[in-house]
Length: 304
Length: 304
Image (tube, rainbow over the protein chains, first blue to last red):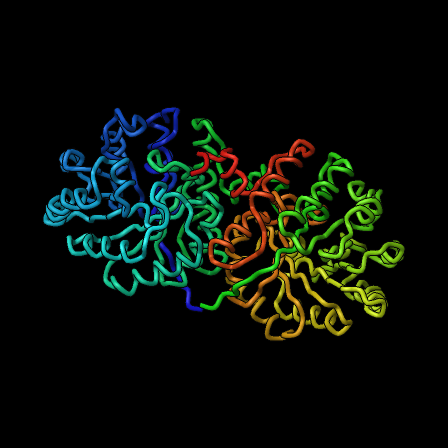
């Protein structure tokens, strides 16, 4: 079995992880959390998003977060859903944009009130514009395995959508199991097909641990040659438009597994744990990560 | 990738899962739990153990459990640590014995106050005797990946120990990651080596989810040709002599993953869930299984 020797973690906690929390996390706490994650070795991070504060009040402080957290050493992403978000992003110094669309029409209709095709037609000129302005563009492909409304999503449909995005010039495709229902056989199948169809584009795997299979799916994706993983410190997250989506797979669980297998991530787990300890008092629920529970001894038995 | 089309679940909840609970589970509740698990399709189960009630009071009702739960349709195991336990077992109608030893000397010394070699020397005549009496003998090999006192355990040491047991005539080797520290690369490596070295013996994988890697390890073991898995309904369990050992991997999490991959288990998940609902009021902690949390909606978001 060939596994990569290095892997990149794209930390999505500050955006994907925090966005659904009922309690507003103070802006200075978010900034401190992001800075601590970078000190732990995170080199790519979703900082925040330019979405309507009416819909996602947690992200209302996006301008301050961006101003305080941009740096040269990290690929700092801002998620933007549409032209309005892009226009706000263009007013900042950030040069890394994340756009998103689901494979399934029903999901997109419920999420952004557009069909997949309508969404693509809106995103194409935006992406081409961003690329002309030398942006790094990441396209997040939701419901790439299962849709909460339509069920199983076909590999062929994901391939077609990803190829469309590739033709627009995106730099990265983050392919997501939004509701945490994929199994490792499906992970291996889809990511093998994507690597074969799109050998010249960065492909990132994004798993949720709703049914406990996230690490198994990552092990399968590694076997397909994937070496980039979206993760969320503390396993925070979910999706407001995807009922049943549990937390994103926890950064610390993924880093621990990768490092134990000799796959280098450059991330210091003690520092991640420290960042999580500092954030915890501001959250309304405990962390779900096995590593954190084990290290903190809050699992059934404490650390060896 | 070749995966098996069928897999066997060995349910260890009634013994391994319950043995460490501080609160005594009423005997009739245990019996009902076991019967419900069988109705759900469990065909092999660790019923109870003949250990000292002073050390493991939860198992003090072993004789009644055995009397009430033996049947023709199921391989009903009783765990026996030594000659004294065997003598008690021979007084019952049960014909399936499970013995155990750790690979690591330090673990065995702390657990049963014998070195690995001393333990083997005690077990050899016991196993040969049981085989003469037409017993099915299962040998549980603890600390096959990591020891809480000695660290990493070498594949060669596991192979040597397993070959010794095979030479005694055991029918099955249950090879355990007792402290839940193995990673999928190690799972694939060890189980591939065992399948190659011992092609004619049943080999079962036994994982704990302490660091969240149990399902990934099972996916790796499947790739090594393993089709038997020890699991514990509700993810109950741990090991009183293995600090840091979290619950056994949950039956429902494993069955869900296997069935989703098209690997048939013959187990009805709704019935497993029902059995767990009925047991829950008698437990002093909630279940840790992702499947159960998802189905019951006690996770971050409820069932799709």
